[in-house]
Image (cartoon, rainbow over all chains, first blue to last red; front, side, top):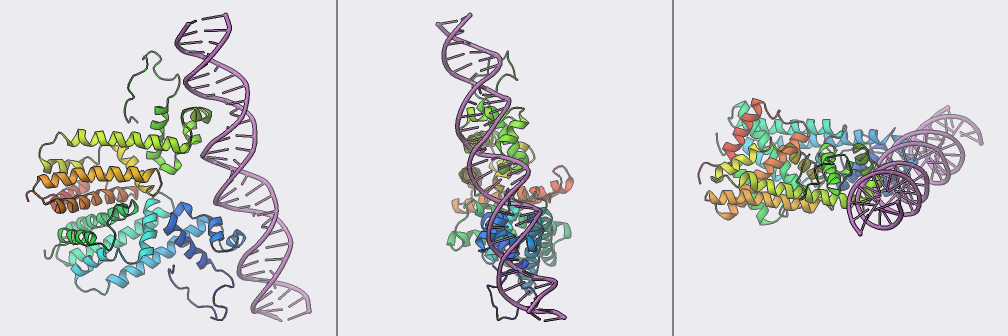
Amino acid sequence: MFYGNDGAMKPAQKSARTTLSAADWERAALDLIAERGVQAMAIEPLARRMGITKGSFYWHFASREALLEQALLRWEKHDARNLIASLGKIDQPRDRLISFFRRVGKEKLTHEVYSELCAAAGHPHVEPVLERVANRRMGHLSAAFEEMGMKPELARHQARLIYSVYLGFLQLQRQQQTPSLSSEEFEAYIEHVIDTLIPSAV
Amino acid sequence: MFYGNDGAMKPAQKSARTTLSAADWERAALDLIAERGVQAMAIEPLARRMGITKGSFYWHFASREALLEQALLRWEKHDARNLIASLGKIDQPRDRLISFFRRVGKEKLTHEVYSELCAAAGHPHVEPVLERVANRRMGHLSAAFEEMGMKPELARHQARLIYSVYLGFLQLQRQQQTPSLSSEEFEAYIEHVIDTLIPSAV
DNA sequence: GTATTACCATACGCCGGAGTATGGTTAGCC
DNA sequence: GGCTAACCATACTCCGGCGTATGGTAATAC
């Protein structure tokens, strides 16, 4: 529902319902993607939802493709900022790794979008984003493991492994096969994952 | 390209190119799903690929939905048979678990279909299949861990964990972020996964 | 106070897939 | 050898999304 602020806020007088900007379309697009997937991000449904017609859309964007591209870039930026913002200030690498898992519950919208993007891997505009994001994230994980004393190759393997667990979790969540995020079974599971994948020392 | 035999083989004289059966459509549907996903399984493209028109299709099936349903059931049966066929004859539970991972490389088509089904979780006809298959598979894993001496709850957690790794692997594969299945980096990774997730004793 | 610009509405043409209707062809039975 | 049922082709209609054309309105510029 947010995904970044675009520099200069408008005069604040005409607060909301005057005219829409490209950024508004991008944000709405991400909302729709989070809810129903990228292939459901069609411009007419979007326009309906925004109480407007598509005549407007083609003023801001050349095509549906262009919107998708911009929206994904926006999401990617947001995610990258988010990553360092929430992990950068944690000193102990082990705590950073743990926090990576615990963060799945928060930042709901971001994860929902990511989950839907995963489902749309293969799409020409989605794939590169997915690749960059995964590499960025695995890079952080790998670095943390190295900080804990692992050899680079081992750290990379461990990062890939742990990231796979995360991806698998998202998948099970999409299939409604994951215990509710606030149950104790979930807590127990998370504990188990942390215990077996994040060593206390190396 | 196979997915089960349908009882009585036709008289064997008129081997192939006489007329098509419902099973032929189902198999072709699964091929198409493996290649381009469930939402690409449209009946006209299917008909084109089979060198026929859709007039035929609606003789065998009531709707696209019906075809999808039947094709998925066929796949599910095939997968279930496959699971016990390749894991049932292995005595040591630890070997069964290891074989689960090593099997990802083989049975290519089956895994491709599964991967695409995962991408289409949320689809009303796909979801229940996905749920049953995941439960069936995790059940086997969990049982193997129990055989090794784990407490039931721990075994379930471990099974879920290991299955998540598998799902995450499929996802990374869809994003082309997995080392080629025959490289040594892949082998090293698999080794690593087995070492950290499959204890040699309990 | 008129011209321009930014934003939006209406109405259209196109395309591809879902279904339906209807008629044609071939195989096997009696 | 004619009938029937199984299988397939042709030719539609309907729908929803994309993109375009064109014209309208409100704010701002000058």
